[in-house]
Length: 189
Image (cartoon, rainbow, N blue to C red; front, side, top):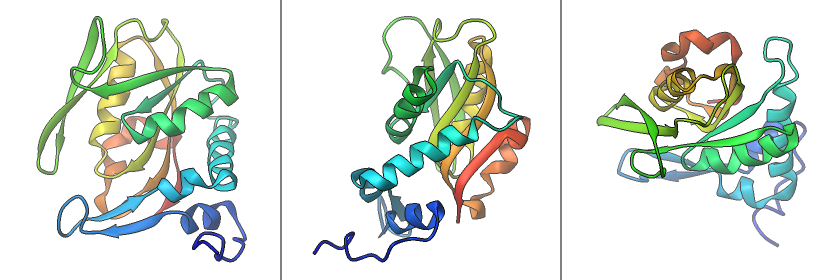
């Protein structure tokens, strides 16, 4: 029997999701505890529950209808695409610099150990498109903050931000004051 099959049946969606996230110590470098969602993605019931939970978030009154769903490279792509499909919305990738063809908008941001930037194609959104931003983890908030700014610069309106997991000890939510009332984390650790 596999390790996943031997886990007792969870009592809630949160417990199901947590039971399928594996901690990997010292990855990608010593001292980091990596939250591996690969077992969650491999479990059809857990993955379906995750997509359903993201979709349910869009039905909250403060979110409203969604025209496009943004997935942030790379695990955000995996989560956002089925959400877009379920909502009948378009999917827009936000990628690391230099990975998208054609004309792009770029937004730089700071990391704990340096800087990075993300891009979106300039015609990804029609004026006023309501956008749901989806990612796997909210850590320090830099990537999501840059993505929110890109959506705005490209003509979209951020309807909400949804993440699988918020690492609250890194205080990333503090950087996202402009969308804090529409930011939803399925799990907070």
